[in-house]
Every structure is written in structure tokens, then in C-alpha cells.
Amino acid sequence: MALYPKLILDALSTVRYPGNGKNLVEAGMVADNIRIDGQKVSFSLIFDRPTDPFMKSMLKAAETAIHTYAAPDAEVTITTESRQAARPEPGKMLPRVKNVVAVSSGKGGVGKSTVAANLAIALANLGYKVGLLDADIFGPSVPKMFQVEDARPYSVEVDGRDLIAPVEKYGIKLLSIGFFVNPDTATLWRGGMASNALKQLVGDADWGDLDYFILDTPPGTSDIHLTLLQTLAITGAVIVSTPQQVALADARKGVDMYTNEKVNVPILGLVENMAWFTPAELPDNRYYLFGREGCKQLAEEMNVPLLGQIPIVQSICESGDRGEPVALNTDSVTGRAFLQLAAAVVRQVDRRNVELAPTEVVKTKK
Image 1 (cartoon, one colour):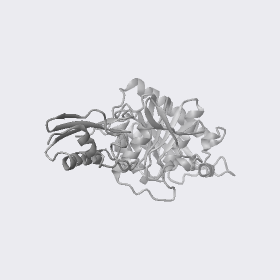
Image 2: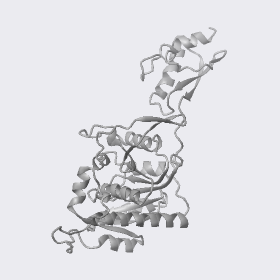
Image 3: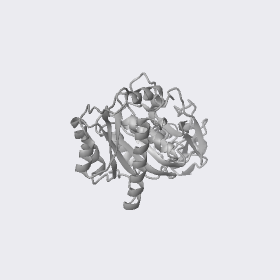
Image 4: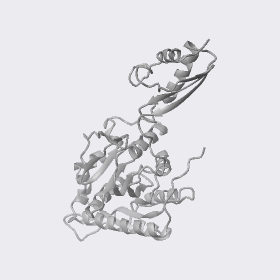
């Protein structure tokens, strides 16, 4: 049976694209490049995005339709085209971002997100352009800490790509999976789904020009950390811990994760959070609730800088819950502490960039 283009188009018109319910021909997804050579058929299918979730199933369905309705023995070759430019490859997703800083902790409950949020604000107070990515996919806290829980990012077209426009608050560009999910519902995702969502927040967003891109990573070590390391060339890591011995033991693991020879991300330093408690009525008193200078000792032992010590002050929690991070008030004790922390991070990043080669993304084994 002789093959001709209309026979192929009629076969493809039996395949419906799930995204809009139209068949491939009606949806304008069949490119005008059908080639027929005897029983050999080749053409392209056009998708809106190079990451279309239905791409593989549509290729298979199109081939099956041709075998079913046109020619059972046809040799079918289908290529894909995209109306939108492809996402840049790992390591090149943020060409206009100067420094990527991961804020991490070995365990939860040490105030990592609080430190990340206030560090971002303190850097902005110093005059830098700052972005903050809430990479804690399963426990996003940035929307609440910045009082933007009702924000819904919109799409903008940049260089032929539809990108997510980050939410802006206090002069900082923000993105979090919390903007896209129900805050009252648990995020029950497999590792691959979470990793893909994170890649979109990084590579499919309009971050623009930034001096510092702060990553609020999940506690511990996980698939999310590996995804970040395989996606971004991280300038350096800041490890947050309390002085408590249990927390310090996990902080060591956090340091090891980044300094592992396969990862090789420099440690900018440690931050000792909840270093001491000073009651408002006794401003000169310090009570070491979780131990004294544990992070300082660990920093000396591991030969990394101690970037700062943040005291426990009731206003830190209250300000975060109100969506007004304490670093906004540069006249407060904690506001000054975070300003000093930001200055220390800037010094360490500048030193790291002079003394060390740029970080490379972790290569994926094939």
C-alpha cells in the first residue's frame, strides 16, 4: 500500500493530546515536514515546552496510530520540536547570578530557615541584589516568614521562554514550592517529582541579576541536596547549628557532604544559632541553654571560620511568624548580629573567589 501525507495526517488525527483534548493535527502539533520514502515515514511533533510531560507518550501513540491506520510495516521516525527555548544545561542556568550560597544544617530545628531569611535581608541591607530560594520542598517556610503566603507567581516571557516571576518582598526575590501547593496539605511526592519541581524553581524562573542567590536547603542530606549540586555551581555553603552536642554531630555530616571529593563545595563557615539567651529585663546576662561555644570549638577543629553567633531572643520567633524578619531592624541586638553575619559571609565569599577555582556541578553518572 502506497503511503502519502494525508494518510499519515488522518492516522495522527486519531491521537488526542491530554493537555488540551485536541488531536495532534487539530492542535497544530504536526510539523510541515512529513517525508515518505517507500515504507519509511519521518516527521516532527511540536510541543510548547521541551519538558512537556506527555512527550514520550505522544511519540509512542503517534507511531502506534500510523501502524494501526496507515501501514503496519512502516518504519516510523519521529523527532520533536519546541515552541519554547530549552532550559539551559546544569551549571549554566543562572548566568547573571554572581554567587550561590547554600544555607544548610545537619538536623532540623536549629533555625536554618530563620538564618537564611535574615541573612538574605541583611545582605540586601548592605546594598546587594539578593534572591532567596526555599529549597525545602517538603517543609517550605519562606512564604510565612515573609508574609507572602497568598502570593501566586505569574509567568513572564524572557528570550522566547515562559519563566516564573519571583515574588519580591523587602527588596528580595523569593520563590518557594509553598506558592504552588496547599499550605494545609502534606506534599506527598516521590524524590523524582520533588527534584523536578526544584529544577523548575531554579531554571525556569526569571531571577535576573543577583549578587547573592541564597538557598534555604532542607535539613540533613537528601535527594534535594544532590539535585542542587547537580544543577547549580554552588559558590559555598554556610552550616547552621546550635551549640548542643547532638546538633554539632550532625553539623559535621553537613560539612562532610559539601567537602566530599565528589562534591567539593567550599565551606564558607559555621553559624552558631541559639548561642545564648538574654532576657529583656536583664540585658547584660547570658544564659547558655544549649551549651557554650560548641560551634566555635567545632569550627576550630574543622579549620573553618565561625561566621557569627546569634542569640536567642523572643522577638526572632515573633518577627518570623509575623512575616517581618528581625534583620529588618538593624538597631536591634539580633539585627546587628545578622548584619555582622552578612558582612562575614561577603568577606568569605570574596576570599573564596580569589583563592579557589569556580565550583563545578556534580556530574550525573550515566
